[in-house]
Image (cartoon, rainbow, N blue to C red; front, side):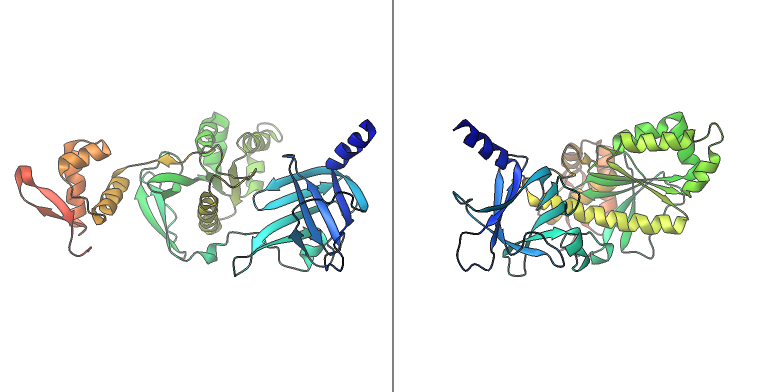
Length: 365
């Protein structure tokens, strides 16, 4: 009995391929995936390994009592990653593969078994954020202290000047900073790395869901600057990248390339953020980049006015007192913001003196 129990426990840790006991099935093989979370997934498929094409897999409710086992393979890793399961076997050949859960146009869930060989013959079904796929213009915040900022005139981005707590360019979600880019010229990057200022910048950036450092300059030029000790500066940059591994780094040869990459990176980060947000807390994922990160709430002048305009469209009637209390600013700042919203044609003043209040402009209704 102990030997039998031990054999069963050993099999629980292996990737099992068995014959499908269901007669005349078009999927003659059963697979059992031993996930690291102790759960197992049972699938039926038509071959023992994906070669030229991805293999379609059909979920099976339970593993049969006494299947005819064809292979019991040692597993190096079998781990769920969002809508996929990564499988790595302990053997020299045909060791890496993945199982991907996706949906067709009718909303039906499909499962495919993929290997590096099958991916050569078919387009991988993994979602890859593409900047050109954005359906609407993005508004990118540019820090008010940024000199000679990227204009993004050739791209589907609308730059708006704001006060950013970190980074030079950012994306907001409901007045919360969710994405930031720190733009550096090569000399500035090298100096800030040596003095330690870059370390503090990276500390703040790494707390965001998505962050990047884009350097306008060649990596080879950084190596040429390393005249203190051979490789010392490059070692320092490498150590910072490892220490703050959540932050993406890019060395762009020219200003134009840096701006181009920034646009595509911001677009990809925007899509990824909303993709992971929409998955909900019930989604079991070990690779959600939003975990252990936080969006930074910002209500600068632009943010206050944007929020006030949005709430006015929902029926809010503002007074300077209520505005000041809502955004925790002085009455003077509140009157200044409301005056600006009137000049922009968003609000209209009504009444006078103590009875003055602000409603949504007729142009906005």
